[in-house]
Length: 134
Image (tube, rainbow, N blue to C red; front, side, top):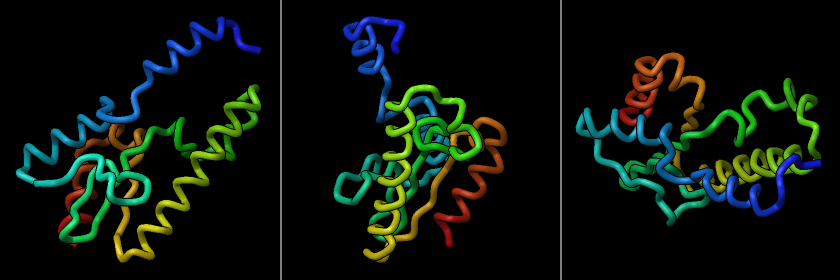
């Protein structure tokens, strides 16, 4: 059972960004700083990759650990709400489908996790640059 009213919960959820999150801004900034040209939130592809290189057919998704279920099986038991378990499971399933669709279209896909950007940004950006150049 929720501890806030539906109106308050709705307002809270509306404030959760799905584009141009602080995490995405960190990655976008690092790419721009190094002169990398890219497309943001490329809607022409399944899943709308956060970063896309259409000529090279490469896509990068910058994902939050919670919303996209990083190591979800290890912590799903701590989520009491059936709604949130189903939401995260649906997100994970949608991510897998989108990655599969992109690969079938000949695209290479990289996922950048929130914890990697926060813990070791330099190493994460190195991986991103290697992916771009590969």
